[in-house]
Amino acid sequence: MQALTALLVLITVMALLPNPSRALHRLNSPASRPSVGGSDLARSAGRRLGVIFAIVAVGILVSASTGPAVVVTALAVGVVAMVVVGQRARALRRRTAAARRATVIEACDVLAAELAAGRPPAAALEGAATVCPDLKVASAAAKLGGDVPALLELIAESPGAEGLRALAAAWRVADESGAAFALLTERLADSLRADETIRRQITTGLAGTRATARLLAVLPVFGTALGYAIGADPLAFLTNTPPGWLCLALGLTLTILGLRWTDAQTRPPWESRHRANQRA
Image (cartoon, rainbow, N blue to C red; front, top):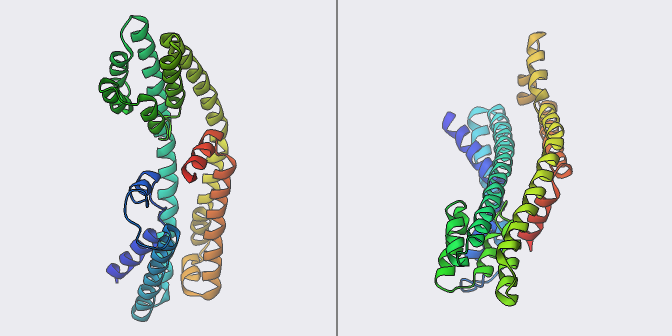
């Protein structure tokens, strides 16, 4: 019974996982491999539908052998696990993006200092790459005479590396017009630092709203504990009776919708722009 329950939870979480990232989509895009017919959207929908059918089949087997309470419990645990993993993944992405923005600003400072000291752009970019590992590919391209601005724009698609798009523009302007690259890079670093200060202020202002939403999401747990404290058995009601199944499904749905709505309302503008670029 435990093995079937674990299998049902695993299939549920897999069915609700997000789609592959844009980089993986590029590797699998029609431009990089022969066309096999059918759209990516249709294939993804078919894959999700197959997983749903697998969930239903496993649920029927478990229900026939152990009763519906095990199925309802496993599905609820799977949904809760999916929500927790999603929230932690979003928080990790925000921290990773903030750390990358800090390294990009530091790399621009190093690049400006190296250029002001009289080093050529390729050598200065090599010094900046020691601070920001994302610049190592661009540094290698600069040594080989490659298209550095194009590589910088490609790297800038990563969350938190958006500042490299402005660096690519500055590199291109310096190449085409002979402008003072050191001065452009120094001003770029100051601009990125000012933008990061504003981002931190916005993030701090939104932290309270996000914390409130997470607190409201876990309140049903305290309500269940309170039910047991007064002598009731809320879990038996939720997992063994049709009205309880309806209440459980409705509660989980409203909790997920509330978290998603709060995330959409508190999403900073730079994250919205990045999502729009990923869809493009």
